[in-house]
Length: 88
Image (cartoon, rainbow, N blue to C red; front, top):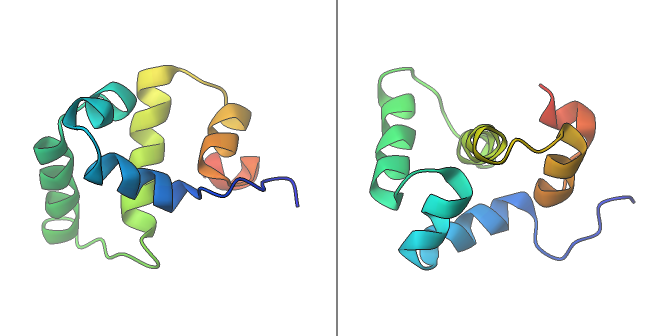
């Protein structure tokens, strides 16, 4: 396997949520309460549902790419996903 980090993307997002409040803002570009409200709105208004926490992680991937400007390959490494998964 190419992606062998002990910390999966899902685990990294939960580490951001549980960690220092400035860290999630630095990595995803918004404060924790705003991120959680956005997740809630996507679930409530748009009817999106978590499938193995995909909604939460996909939102984090989008925000992380927007904030950092990193390549698909670099984001794939951070979230431990293939380039194909990241580019969807």
